[in-house]
Image 1 (cartoon, rainbow, N blue to C red):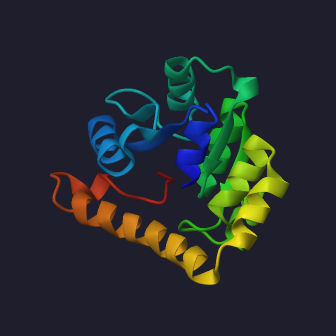
Image 2: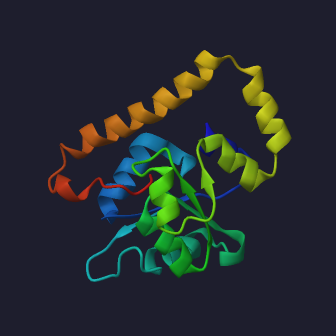
Length: 173
């Protein structure tokens, strides 16, 4: 839902990951279809996160200036990557790291729900909040469960790929 809203608003999105580039592109297409505009996975003999190489590559593909971009991640490596890239960085605590861990590793802005990203990026806090308050609790719980189901499906799919030990780690997708 968050990616769909960003797409509707004309916001370009990318996945930057240390997972192999071809595998990352396959996973992005399988799980997000046309909602992701660029994928920058790891390449042989190229630096990986927290080096800014992949982020700068994604920005180039997207034709987006650093000052107009934000880096979102769920790990300490993502915090360092955002800082090394010179981007505003937002940490999310619904991934594999706790809020406490993220703070201890230098997180400056932390969000706990994907909808908060819409509030920040689109500046529609009042509108987004009203939308959520208008939904019943079961709808909100269903969205959270969908997120975890997607993570499980990605894990299942990754386990079928040769070299699976490098497919998934704590980076955001």
